[in-house]
Amino acid sequence: FNYILALDASSSMLANDFSPNRMTVAKENAQNFVNSLNAEVKIGVVSFSGVTRVETALTGDKKLVNNMIDKIDISSAGGTDISGAIMTSVNLLVIEPDKAKAVIVLTDGQQTVGSPLEEGINYAVGKNVVVHTIGMATEKGGEFELTQLLSTLDAASLKNIADNTGGKYFIAGDKTSMDAAFKEIVNLSEQNIPHQLRLPFLIAGLLLLLIEWVLISTRFRTLP
Image (cartoon, rainbow, N blue to C red; front, side, top):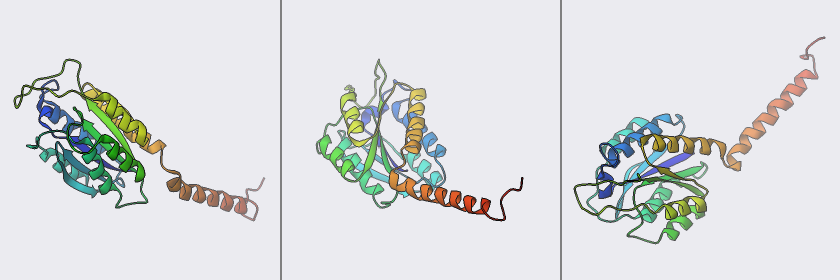
């Protein structure tokens, strides 16, 4: 699998129900996820609010990715455009058509601006891209300085995105559950490698079995 991590950078990510705030915890967990990936896996990062910004395209340079995640800051653009973030992420993934592809959307809010969520979902499905969603929310909520309004998590929409693209929805109420969500995404990806990617390994395995059978049937067979 190749991944694009889409990280919410709207002002509500400064809420203090995660210590010291949501953005800091989200970035720390995202970097831990990057460090857990195999060397051959490529990953890119986008940040989004009312607009989507490409932080880094697909790359195997994990140090670069972590540096770019570290530099993500709260966006000055208002609103949250999850659909736009999905479509931008998909566009970054399709440059390697032979690789399985997944987007991970990490957000504490809901779609407030941009195209309808259905457009993002349909775009991902049309390009055979899985979308996992992680909802960052605690039961008590939190306060933040830039505004007195606290965005609410639209769990139903995030679940709808995941369900319709073959992904999974996770609720992350603390740092531990967010870390567990990222780990499960890696496990799910390893278990669901598309058939076209498994086929070469299957053929190679059959060839090895055939070679072994031929050798056993010739002078290389084990003597009793």
